[in-house]
Length: 112
Length: 117
Image 1 (cartoon, rainbow over the protein chains, first blue to last red):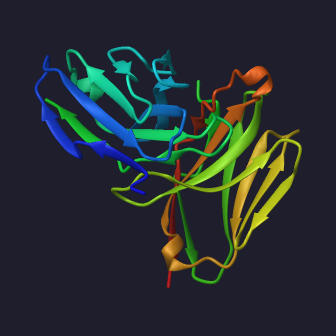
Image 2 (cartoon, helix red, strand yellow):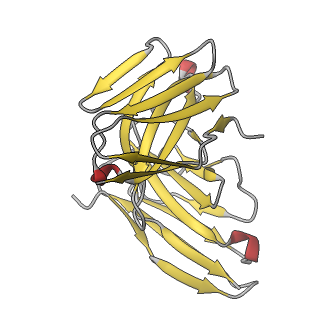
Image 3 (cartoon, chains in turn green, blue):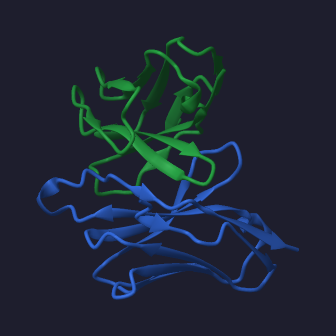
């Protein structure tokens, strides 16, 4: 099992550009999450999904959109990147929202 | 408003000694607490958890203590090993009564633990 994988590992964007971060899990988990980690802030929840076809807002959803068209994939989109979105993004999944979450290795995003 | 706080940005201990990492929370709705460990360039990995119905949970060298009245939890690592050097995050989740928490975690800022040989 690969667990949770994230693509890409690193990306540089210019302000205003768009991109999609891909998260994939092979553990048949229902719940998936996107977090961002900033210095001194810990991890903050952006969006989450409780099953295929569902999405919901987390703590810091502004400027991001998500989709969960397939159970194993959770996509995070930035329509118009801003320097404030420079961060490390982590995807996580869990079986039923009661279990612990398994995290991917992260995507480092730099917006210039 | 930081609902989960780890007030010590860093901690340095000698190999073989005890490491104590602290975490405070303000939201009374939190009733499930977790510790995650993170190495550089990797995602966080689950370490240990505790439910609010307990005050202690032990797993090998790791023990988590929960003081609900003080809204405080701590992670004890005994004995500390150089491989324990990492960032440790405390996280909390509200009650899943009615299935509404969805496992949403609120994280602290993290504490960098360095264990010297």
